[in-house]
Amino acid sequence: MSEMITDIGIDLGTATVIIYVKGKGIVLKEPSVVAYDTRTGKVFCVGREAYTMIGRTPDRIRAVKPLDQGVISDHELCEKMLQYFLKKVYQNALLKPRVALCVPSAITDVESRAVVEAAVKAGARKVYLIEEPVAAAIGAKIDISKPSGSMVLDIGGGTADIAVLSLSGIVQKESVKIGGDRFDQAIVRYLRERYGLLVGEKMAEQVKREIGTVAQEPGDDSFEVKGRNLSTGLPEKRTVTAKELQPCLLEMAEQIVQAMQAVLERTPPELVGDISTAGIVMTGGGSLLRGMDELVQKRLRVTARVAEEAEDCVAIGTGRCFEYIDQLSEDVIRYAVNR
Ligand SMILES: Nc1ncnc2c1ncn2[C@@H]1O[C@H](COP(=O)(O)OP(=O)(O)OP(=O)(O)O)[C@@H](O)[C@H]1O
Ligand SMILES: [Mg+2]
Image 1 (cartoon, rainbow, N blue to C red):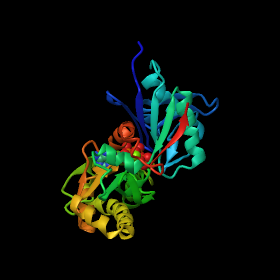
Image 2 (cartoon, helix red, strand yellow):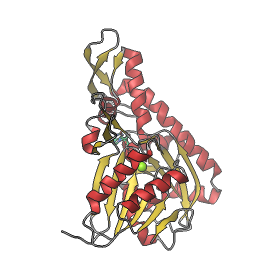
Image 3 (cartoon, rainbow, N blue to C red):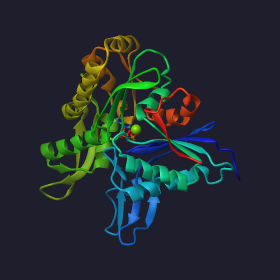
Image 4 (cartoon, rainbow, N blue to C red):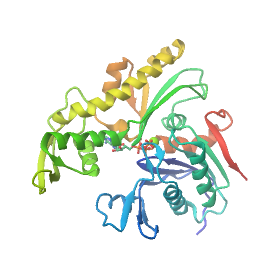
């Protein structure tokens, strides 16, 4: 059946692709993973199904993240993934929709043209590209049009993006390649060095979500990790605690806080004053790490809060950017295709 879909927002993230449709809300949320046949190049499956295959594929199949550390590591697969998701969302659309895309901040113009082209091939009428912190702020219900400074921190899978916004524009920004993936890798490294236990990144991510914390008081949560003993080569289970993992996670988190501090130092004093009144808003899945808000608050001496629906903010803001399109300047949102 055909349906009316007019405006779509897509957060093309390193870890997750999230699609928002006007009038419907979030309609798709799937891991940014593609599994393909290494001999023929044929795509096997995309998204959730492909995610379950990571680290579990035979030689013939590879499950990869086409976006890695906030950049496109595989163009062709990235395009295929995007097209697959878009078709899932609007293959029956009566009118060709307008699409706003939020891509990782480090991707180049050539790379963004490739994803824009993928959106067009999948049937978009107009395509816009929006800056991630602005989308995050709109999604977190911050009134960005005011002549008042707000600070947004988005911690994704690949990067942490920090920005100071005022009057619908970006005053200062910084992107550091420290996102949730780096926290997972820190856990993998710790377990290998401390116990000679080899675990996959997916297991490490699970540990992080279950018990990971950067809080001063880590609590006494623990988790049974499954991996392989490096000296015996045999499977092994081991109970790890939140407390012992805290230092390696904290080391990553501190680097994000340092980048935030550098941004604040470059921010004009009037706006710093506004930020200390309004507080810092945190978005992205990585912001959900326990104690992260507390750490930001303690180090920067400014209130920090995790936005509602933190993981979805960028997608929501990207989808709703059409409501603000007239007030947003070209350095924040630009036309990529207009037919
Ligand atoms: N409860 C949680 N605690 C800690 N980390 C979490 C939690 N939930 C999700 N994450 C982490 O958040 C990250 C994904 O966040 P998000 O979906 O915002 O990334 P993304 O937008 O795809 O990436 P990017 O913006 O870097 O391109 C993953 O590393 C995931 O492990
Ligand atoms: Mg993101």
